[in-house]
Amino acid sequence: MENANASKSAIGAELKRIEEDCIHSGKAHFNAGDRWARYHYWLGVPSVVLSALAGAAFFKDYGSAAGVMSSVVAVLTSLMTFLKPSERAAAHKGSGDQYLTLRNDARVFREIRLQYACDELAAIAGLDEFTKRRNELNQASAQFSRADFELARKGIDEGEGAHRVDLPGGA
Image 1 (cartoon, rainbow, N blue to C red):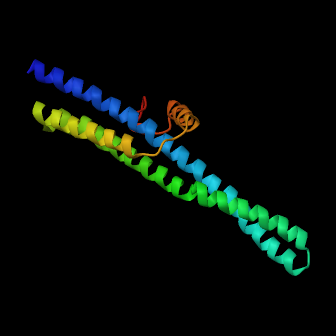
Image 2: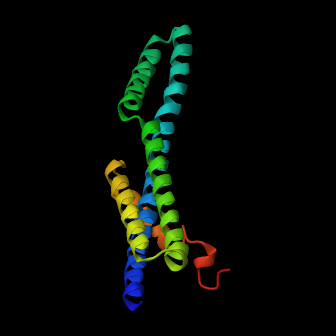
Image 3: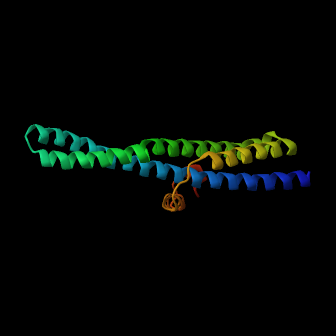
């Protein structure tokens, strides 16, 4: 029985590592998604406004102004096409959602099933499944920036992502 408790304790510790990895990766992906969404608006809104102004300038016989604005619109729309900020934002949000789903699943397994509802072999099989899912997510997810990660770490260190029940004195 003592060996089984030691194994479950080691499995629980590894599940906590997976949870920690997932909260950091998930939050970093959400930060990256927010950043790419801002790029989408920073490029798209001026492009739309300048496009409308260029059309008005053309009809008012301000050809030079219309030409300059049209050139800027061409650059902005080319950047939107090349960088695809809305697609990148959506991809990072999707990855963030998947990491947080994995974190939640690992936490529930660790807190409930590992403690009360599975034997040592089932615990090892569960850990193997969570490790496999994390590795697949790491391989499939887009790269986030170091700044996105540092912002995530700062937020997590300040209590973002913690459940009240897990805080000292929480209910």
